[in-house]
Amino acid sequence: MTVVNLQYYAQLREQAGVSGEQVVTSATSLRDLYEELRATHGFSLMADALKVAVNTQFSPWDRALSDGDTIVFIPPVAGG
Image (cartoon, rainbow, N blue to C red; front, side):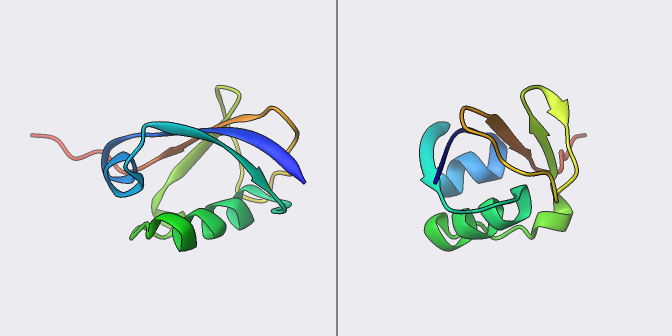
């Protein structure tokens, strides 16, 4: 099991009901983790619609998780 810190913004924050949390996961990649979170929080966005950053660096979805990682799922930004 891996312990990671998550931060949520915009639509994901609204759907999760929190701006961040620490989770213990059996996921082995960022994509697996996001799919776990979609099931838990009911996220409506698919992973391919998001960017993901680990420890302030954009990362590919197949990146392995490490204890203590800080992960930010970044939804698309709409503006006017």
